[in-house]
Length: 154
Image (cartoon, rainbow, N blue to C red; front, side):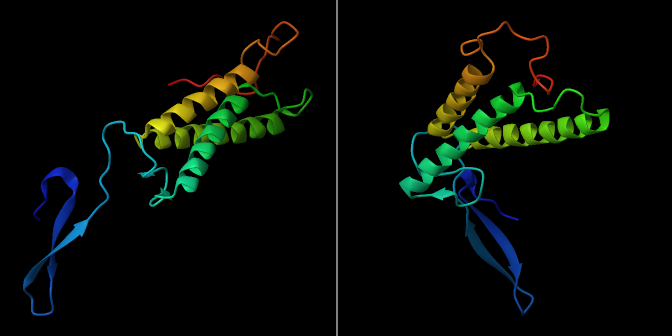
């Protein structure tokens, strides 16, 4: 198999009906390996958001919301006192799976190397922590238990 340099295309060998080999070229979209500015990026899914500005803005809003939601899930208390151990454990497990899934989606979006995506991911985590994790909006002293989920560790 013959490969082009630079990752811009790949030459593939295909057999034709006569048993001979033909060369065809398949062009792939270039994947950025450094941070870049611009709305023409692929974020999370093939072809999304495309080249339309509105779809790029929608992608940025989605990444912001995912990051914000990760922070909310990291600091929320949804399990009611007095819940059975089984119910509390199942709720905890579901919340953990949801939080980790969203955190991985944010991480994969940032791996698009688009600076706008990085900025909205950081902004989402920052505002989420400000509202749910910091003492800025809490009137009482911090409780002994601040979350249903253990802290995230990397």
